[in-house]
Length: 301
Ligand SMILES: [Zn+2]
Image (cartoon, rainbow, N blue to C red; front, side, top):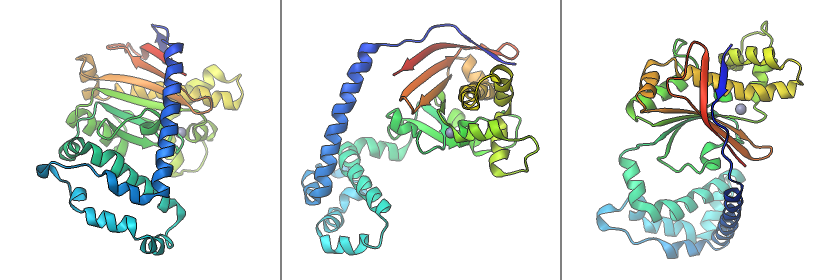
């Protein structure tokens, strides 16, 4: 059974946490007000289009009349959107706000990203709609290559191909990311399915996937069988992250880059019940047999 040795205590700065909360609240309020203004007065969007370098005009900036017509023709817009679902109307507004507030205001950056990406992170997180790593960690376009699957599992190198393994190969060997971050989370339905599945259960897509985390289930039941089922699931949510970190070490090119100091491997746990985030880093050359040590454990709250 694998054990994880905590070599340094977590770092928690309560004062900076307070400031961060204040800053986030202020930002949220301002963004809310701005969004309200834009939705209620769409014509104002036309006033702030940035002046563009003539050599660097994207397709979007070359078609201001298309954008203008769409914004000012309320009747036409109403007729079109009247056939759309409310959900897509919301998405449309959000996209147009993104285009105006971020894309067009940071044109050179987004044009550079259009040519190539060079993310520092590969993030592996659950497909759960409440997790959303870009949102909770503020990862901007170009900063993280992200793969999401049920229960944020990493299959070992020896198993058959999966989209997660393809993402690992591309991001590590081609994009040369410098960090891999596997994020687990509270109340994970995939982990719950893993913990509650019967070995005799008939095959299903979900079962055939979450079985990847079987070793986390086995070790959880070994050390936490006296706990309630909910508590066992919470234990397994973190244990499965550590198991996934160990699985990463079975990939020879990941192990090699880690040993050379070119790649760091991190675990994370997002608790959306109390909105806290735990992060830790795998020790270089740490694996001896089935034992791995971790460092730089931090708790953000
Ligand atoms: Zn999940």
